[in-house]
Image (cartoon, rainbow, N blue to C red; front, side):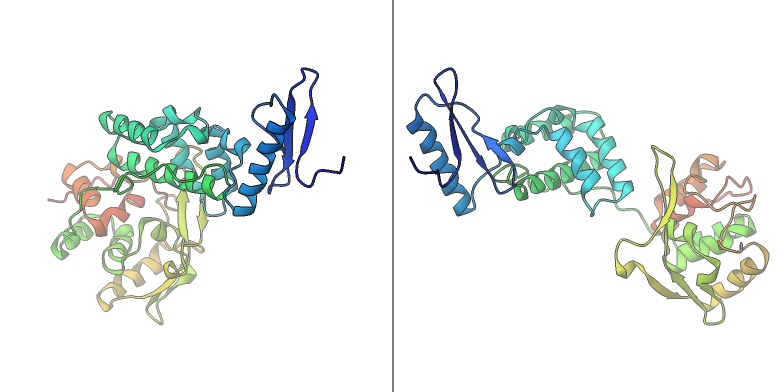
Amino acid sequence: MGRRRFGKLRKLPSGRYQASFVGPTGQRQTAPNTFRTKTDADRWLVNVESDISRGVWLDEQAGRQVFGKYAEAYLRDSPDVGERWAETCTRNMCLHMTDLLDLPLIAISPAVVRSWHAKALAGTGGRASIAQSYRFLRTVMNCAVRDGAIAVNPCQIRGAGKDMAKERPIASPAAIVKLVDAITPRYRAAVLLAAWCGLRRGEVCALATADVDLVANVVRVRRNRVELLESGRKFDKAPKTRAGMRDIAIPPHLRPAMVEHMEKWAGRDRFFLGRVASRQTNDQRRSRFVDEDAVRLVHDCKVQIALNAWIEGDRRVRVG
């Protein structure tokens, strides 16, 4: 008998036949079950070879991986996943996705996804984190499709991944002036940069003194401050996109405050420092406010949400 062109057959002591083959992954795989006759085993190998040649073959071993382990590997190995997003997804798996973690990938059907999503919405979890969980599930299952573990993505609920958070109002110039007047002088430049130049919280915290050019009247955004909630690790990183690295002109009415800050409070490396000359952190924020109106102003207004990073509970702040 000639050598087989594809796959391998082996007769077991039980008299049944085992079929195996080397798939596109380079790993030898065996059929999920044994066969009563050699003809049945050969027919199974012919079908596998045909599926591979047509590009529709599914890796049954990969499909039998449980979602939890596969998702953890995706978070660990994907170059597109940052540490903050990985932390968020890991937390959401514990909060909202426990029903899916032990299911094989091939068992997660559209019906299973609909049932899981309906149960999550009926619970007490936040809508924003449920939407995050759905987006993460959809991304992981897309990866499973590319890996040949499943044929199609079962996440087919229209709009389930959208975050329907309430639109926050934008602070008026009068409200900004009131906050600037009330806050400790060392934080005024931070308030003004967030309000008039559109710097985000992490961008303000990471702003380097060398990137504040008071000759050209330009602020250069080059870094973003990231602080992980679970591990407490803090680090600077480049913006997510090239568009995030930008030069922003300092409006003329901000220049006096910027000059004053540079002369009195800027550090050698960091433009904004805390009271003890430490870099500002993202957690020096609302909980130390005394006046609830000030809390609401900082929390609800788009241009001031960044202020949470550097306001350290100044008891002089009373807004509204």
